[in-house]
Length: 344
Image (cartoon, rainbow, N blue to C red; front, side, top):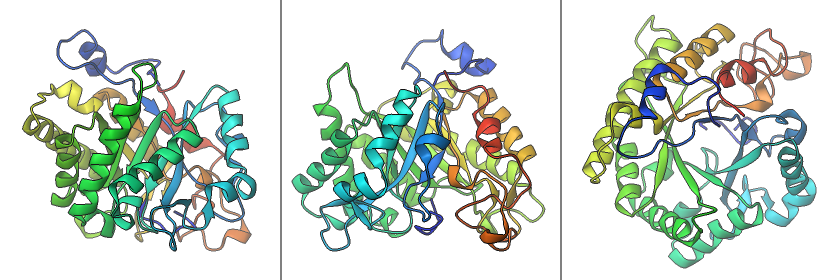
């Protein structure tokens, strides 16, 4: 997500479009899911094992390159995997989520540090770094949040694509690796760099579950007077068309329904980083309804840490921070609203 490190399953009732697609021909649909991002390195440390209990998916961000050892994975550039086990209680909290019936998604990248493929130029070492994380936490879904300088590095994007394709090849049919890429978006859709990254993934042979677009922080790309919901729906429709074109260019024709299924939406709840941009509970409900009607494959948000009302210790609620939404709400209310219609 475009935030600093201190910030930054199946439908119960499918929308009519998605339900119709289940009986169609062509590529199978992925099972849609909802799951919030968690900023695992925010301090004070967040008890996501308790806060996310009951969610089918919880997206843990972010694994990045160690600043001193570029081919070594770390959480946020601050905690090696061993240290995360003790300081962040990583394995303990993941176990708690699984005991509650859910599972985790590990997100590589984010805005604050170098994604592993950017820092690590050795393809075999890069593959080993990814494998180390996925094996350690027995991860069934990997998310690659690629933005800013990482997104503008085609050589790194090619290394990532080739490594991810090899990781999927290593998995058995009984335990496949689901892969998403998370990319910035404007109401005009993905940037040229974003399209190129997706094309590189597909050309490398990655079985890409979908493209998750960050429907947040639009700044000047949002028209004057345009609501956050309208901007997000416009962005989603533009990205949907791009998804169809990108898969077709890779020799994989997608129907309208299949392309929606390969799209994810991730708003930033409450007060966004850009002044004047706010996603309130009414907007969240509208986005959830839009997602279900279109049959999108994924609904996430930034972040579970923020899904509560601010208190005096959090500072000015009109300014985005890592620990609360800036709005009056019940704790966990955005999780319930955005996840409605998704889940076990």
